Amino acid sequence: MHKPVPTNSLAPTRWHRLTDTLKRFFDGDIFYSYRQSPITIIASIITLLIFISAAGASWIAPQNPFDMASLDLLDSHIPPAWDAGGDSRYMLGTDDQGRDLFSAILYGSRISLLVGFSSVIFSLTLGVSLGVISGYIGGTVDAVIMRVAEIQISFPAILIALLVDGIMRTMIPGTDVERLSVSVLIFSIGISGWVQYARTVRSSTMVEKNKEYVQAARVIGIRPGLIMWRHILPNVMGPVLVIATIHLAVAIITEATLSFLGVGVPPTEPSLGTLIRIGNDFLFSGEWWITIFPSIFLAVLVLSVNLLGDWLRDALNPKLR
Image 1 (cartoon, rainbow, N blue to C red):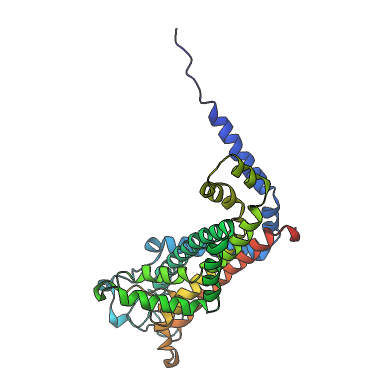
Image 2 (image 1 turned 90 degrees about the vertical axis):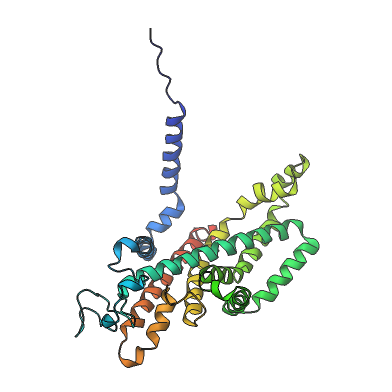
């Protein structure tokens, strides 16, 4: 007599939990606020399309602009396809090296987003860690961290990034500068943006550490490190997500600025800032498309991310509900 095959009783429970979570999300205030904001919906669609285009540049772009062997200098300075003298192979025209501008923008946006996301993650990790430690421990540790933060916040972020980038490049051997340029750029932008995370998390931590659940954790003997990371940290991350969204746009602009100034990624792997800098040299000679199209793409990307950050800030603010 065959025994019945036992079924996984947890599967329906997990499925119901997932459906209940999704139902609560779609019925919640945040998604309602999202549905009521056409500008936010448009911004999220544009941002999503840009992210997908950057991630799939290898399949979408008709040319690999980083492959120097596939480029032809005879195809340089070709205007957009609809302009007189344009070529149907190059929808947005070509730059001074014969690179298809549409392909270069897609690949350049990938580098800009990579640097932006990585620097935000670095800033967030460093700032949140220092903020929790400063707010929970207090005393001399708090004073030292906050004094450093106040000194740094008195200087523009772009100057901090330029200073750190210059120091890092002098410390790296000349043969490795180009290979490590993206990593240096991420570190430079990341180290210039941790202060806002630290100050916000410190304030929230100082409020949370006096609440009953933290006092109960101390009474039962939980170590301070576990209290900070297991109990306090999850309750101070709400404002951090808003800051990170807005900081992403700032990081992308900072990367573009550094690349425009010539201290970003190498010209052989151009980001949006590098493309704008290259096109700026030909702007007054009538070859406007080399700098205009990357500039428009960068402006649309930053504006869309900023609009999403503004909406998220308002949606998570209980006073505005």
